[in-house]
Image 1: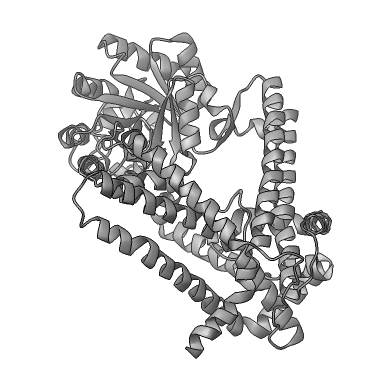
Image 2: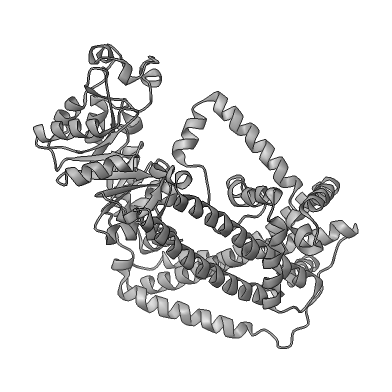
Length: 586
């Protein structure tokens, strides 16, 4: 009983702070949304003036070679400072007021946090902002801004790092270095915002506090996170898991469906609220620790005297009404909101994925046997003008030859062996796939030019496979050339990063890297009458996620696994269907 009261007392300042945090989140998110709306319109005007609709990973040089691109970069950098001002600095001001018991208006807290960012407008401050925006979310350490909190290293880059001992070692050293920098400067923004110190002074103070209290900091973080986790798990067990488990005992029908919708909707709202309060509560804890370490003893949070008591009952009634409305709407349109089957096509990566030899005829056969809709392959030009399959710049990885395709004749390439099999020509792959699979042909490497496009199209026409081939590339200018001059051909542009009206690019398919394949991006592509691909989804969870979205094609190395998931999706319960769909949205 004593432990229970102690836990309750520890959490009391944080539960009392929730109304203030909610108000703060609503106001600052609204401000940021307005800024992003205006920024988006300005970006579109700048792109339009340069004759573009979007900037992608295939057109990144534009950002450094035109005045429009340079201005976009500057505005993007300004946005990071604005995010830090509203997303972090103002949160720290709010946390200070909540911890010290100051009854300061929300407007004053936001204003103070915003103007404190002026101390970051210098070279050292730029490094701090870039660390917060780009490094911290990848490391998963400390606090970052909401715009980049889900930033991660793309799969195609991480796979290259993992494939090399040297790259892995260098990446490990980089992680250790940035972790050390991040830990040492955990309180740098607190010192700037709360004590109005310069960045240099704030850094020295943060490093001194962490050096003297790092053991306690770890202990306090573990305890705090465990308290929050136990509270959330308790709520989830009592209000979600137990009821849903009991529902599974009921026969399938209207009653079980209504109860499933109700409890899953309630659980989703709780999850969203937890996400909304999570970072502000953590910053509040960090602020309490900052005061404790400065004074050398535990700092007790002061209670804020409010003019009017907070009505939690009213908030509860509003939430119940929201859940009730959602239950009615989702019950009527359940099959529309939570479809049982998937229309997503599975496409084998590099011929047959991991289940066949890379970019080979046997790999293609493996993909066909597994039930793949299509196969993605890579073509490059030889010295004597033929087109052969190879992904890398050289044949070193697949065939042990360090020469490039453009340095070799077809005769020389044919002498190579990929686990006992010869390197196929593009023509051989066309013949093998005809009438069976769609061949997503990536124009690859140094020889990916207009000549390659012209020659590839000539071969496709020769075998009358215009409807069975999609020409794809990371080079947008090449795809634009094909789409403009050969409108009967199917084309696809692959991008792992973009902004602007990407969906308006001149092509039939747009291939998105996993993290950028959001529901909004996919919907935008469909509104433009185009098809969306996602690459390269290999993990089971990732595959299931995209199979439950509206994406048109899933490029993967694990074909059999993806095909198996397609079958599994057709036998899901109402609960599984709801959870899978909600995951794709959140």
